Length: 185
Image (cartoon, rainbow, N blue to C red):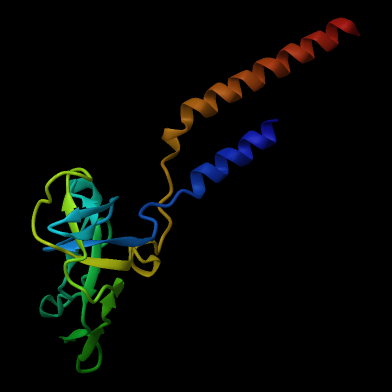
């Protein structure tokens, strides 16, 4: 039993990584991709995909590669990165400096060619808020090569109380069994 708990505790502690890569579909309205699909509804005489306008279900779009600031600019978290290749000159590269290439990142993989295929709204049958959007059939974000280069382990103190309770229970049972065996002998 103790070995099982120890194995579970170690797996829980060392396998938890922050910002997993996500992918899905959504509705691009203005500068955001809304990701919570509510259903289809008739809007202004035609069927449209309706997405929730809740701020917690949207991803901002990063269009800049920051070549003018001499650094790559892939943003992790609630961002979709959509920028072209850039470069900047780094004078610290021996012997005489060199150009550093910032690779292009296009997290939006597939989009509908028909603008106006979706809208955002608070609920399925509510009046849409904002303009028509472009249906994004496939996006991804939080790419591991940028966002998970080192696993972000959970702090051990988050699991200390359950571990202490289990160790106390295990120790109490071990002592009780030992005292019972010595009484029987």
